[in-house]
Length: 298
Image (cartoon, rainbow, N blue to C red; front, side, top):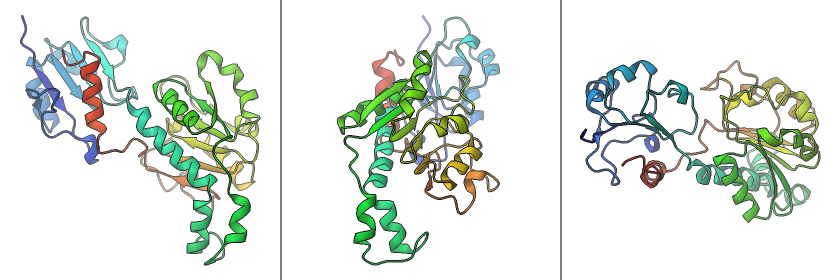
């Protein structure tokens, strides 16, 4: 019988995405902090827990039977079709609970006037006012009773939908098998939430034609992947008042480059996050707890 060896290489710039000591779910794990150290230990590993793994590395891993990554996206590890016989792959499925809070934060901040009030406070995008009570009043509304379309209704999308429903939002989940229902759903949507992956033919699925189906009061929130949005079309819709606002956590090119249309000054009601919707100090705790629960550490 091959002795189990769990090899963990989760070294990332952000603190919450980095592991520097064995997790409590696997105290005997070997934790490394560089590609060189990972490749040195890989020949004896039965489990490889990583952010990225190159297909050619399978030749170095004759004992490998589990490849696991915290990431929900498929970009950094080989596809299922490229796995050697006997190797099982696990992707994180826990992100939705965190990302749903980011989506709700955007929705509440917009609906309850926080962004408008801040604009008057700073004078950044409107005349500075110390007490804009009358001006702010017509901009505030309740989130409860609004309608959201969640495009991309997998693990993340369903978690977002559940949290929105708990706050009184009517939710329409749209995925590949019911994509034909999207136009009718958009016509009366207050929110379009994108939780799409980047590897399933989703390029520019939200284009000028799709944006035109939304009422002008609608707000776009993208926490999926940036390839899904036609960026110039989005900028035009915001500038022409065809869309109320957009909250973007992801972009076609990351890091966001100065020459991106979404990096330009003067795009009204465009709010950007640096791919941060899943930031949380318990991110890795949630990952290892889920991996153990699903049998990925056995």
